Length: 240
Image (cartoon, rainbow, N blue to C red; front, side):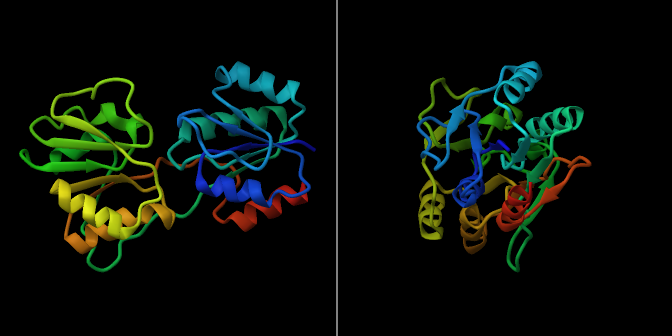
């Protein structure tokens, strides 16, 4: 058996570390420059579309696929599940639980990035914890100061007026986030419901500072096997 692990998240790293004795190839999308190395053989970059993905599976003798990509990489997940079904390959998605509000949180759920402008008044400072992949969807936030945090230094100018990039590599502590939001005078925080303890620190900081949060809802999931713990994902891989 050769397992393909679609990685890119902290949970994928934990899964890779637990796959002792399993023949595995990890794949990174290449969205982050100089990622920390994984403890298994790893490739980086896209597959060249669906045809390229099929070719990779065949040429590398892949017999099962474990998708531990970001919860919002839904296009990748849907394509992978479809191709695996057509090729009769076992497929599993690891999807960590989403966040739920705690007492004192001021959350409003929105369906799309474009919906943020309807909630955020002009003249305010908006901190985007969504990454650069979704940035174009916030182009209608004219009249606000928009700050987008990303891991790598930007290669291109900010795509719309009134915005700026802030480079930072996680993890960030609650104290780090409180200091940052206070220094920037953040009025609104916009995030994706990625889940996970490490990324929740910005939400804890927002609660302590009384900052309202716009939470972009998760994309709908398809009809394929899903687990929400690392242990369950490892059990599945070991049973193959």
